[in-house]
Length: 122
Image (cartoon, rainbow, N blue to C red; front, side, top):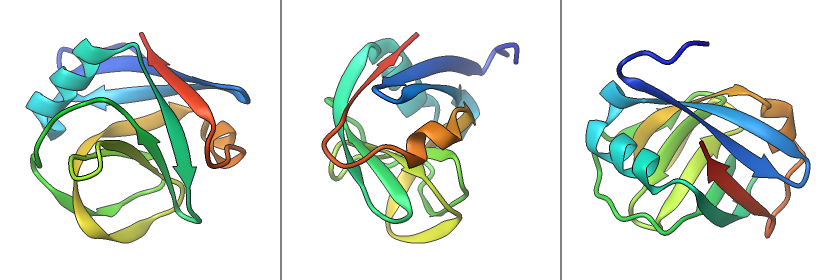
């Protein structure tokens, strides 16, 4: 997929493989720009039944908040400084900032567990 003016493709490396992510600027321009300029970033995972949290050293505030995520959708939670990836379609109890979506490697995410290191890079 070619990057458009308002899109950035980044990757996430895990011990199980590499995931390709499309950040979409129009969803939340300030947060997407901040994330894109901050890579490479590394963090640890926390996995629940429906969500994968990645703790990152990224500051931000809510921007165009959502409470419903679709499978593969990427969001940022400023409250706990985490990037969140939905493993299933779901409603969540707290607002998050939308960032984009996983475009390749969803199967790698389902094999991850809690406490694994991941690296986001260009």
